[in-house]
Structures are given as C-alpha cells and as structure tokens.
Length: 67
Image (cartoon, rainbow, N blue to C red; front, side):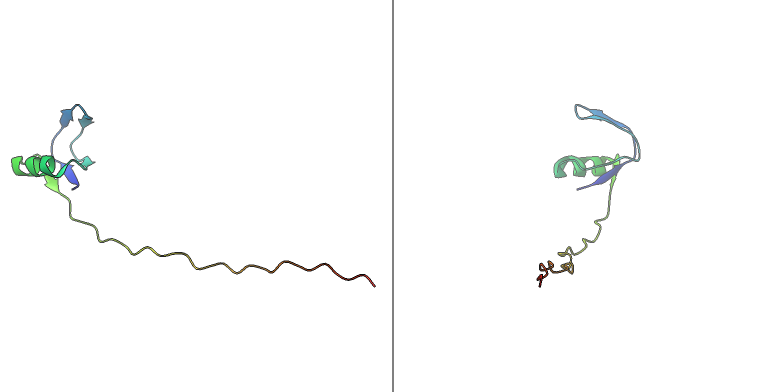
C-alpha cells in the first residue's frame, strides 16, 4: 500500500523526506498511518491494457519477368 509521509523517516532502507511517496509492507504502512506519520494514498483506477492493433504491411514485391 502506498503512503505519503507527513514527516521525515530514516531507517536501514534510507532517508525519506516529508511528502515522499513510499510503498512499505502493509503492516508498516498501517503503523505509520495509525501513528499519524503518513497518509494513505487512494488507489488509482487501473487502466485496461490491450494489444496494439496490427500494422498494415506492404506485401513483398515479386521480381519482374524479363521478356
């Protein structure tokens, strides 16, 4: 779960400034939110992914007959 930090957070994984968006494990994220150090970010709606349409391909030219 992604959270936005309200304060500086430092630990073995690095230093994160206020306003940083991080993706900690769920239990850590819940603890940060409960303590008031972070706010939960709303889930963004997922966009549907699709395969691109096939492109038109020019057929290979045939060799001309020499008469």
